[in-house]
Amino acid sequence: MTLLDATASAAARRAILARLRGAAPAQPLPTPDLAPFFQSPFGRGVQGERPAPADLIAPFEAAARGWRAEVLHASPANWPAAVQQVLQQRGCRHLAVGQGFPGLHALTAQLAPQLGHGLTLHPFASPLEDWKPQLFDQIDAGLTCAAAGVADTGSLVLQPGPGEPRTLSLVPPLHIAVLPARRLYASLAAAWSALQPQADMPTNLLLISGPSKTADIQQVLAFGAHGPKELVIVLVNDLQNDSEVCA
Image (cartoon, rainbow, N blue to C red; front, side, top):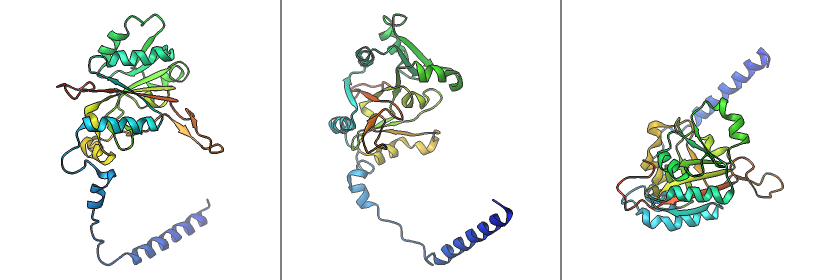
């Protein structure tokens, strides 16, 4: 762009902004009435008493399966066995997990007989640049712990950080997500209201609805083009426990 073009562009921008400011209403716009939103399915659970997570398990599972996610039910005691079952059924040999994954000790104990005998556990403890060849060419599955589940849409909310990088849920062909049932919310707005992620916003806040999919080519739905081809949700019923699985 020449100096003359840049000057003309700046003048045009000023003219457009001046016309927009001139067309602004003299009085402030009225505050919108959000009552219809809060009363709708999309705002359910934001105000008033929170719907019981026990009542949200069935709708969450139905919606998640609609996105082609697999949902396994587990207890706080046997969720590592459920993860082990997923790995064995798919013949996975390399599992990546964040070094901050809170259930890492229990998982390592469960997988101990297989470690070094066909299965390798890779804690994400190195800079990404040092990990790329292994992450893209070798890792079969990534394990994460979801911050929330949204019953209306069957979606997961993940809050990545140094202890659990977002690449764990974006790169390996299989994504296994552990979701404590007490983290189920009726709607995305309700989950957002409870988590308050804006108070400590990560670089990415992930909303995951099923495995990666696209229909860019001839409108034919294909899975795994841009991320995991499979999503398995281990739904842990911790509603009777005092402590969370992923606390």
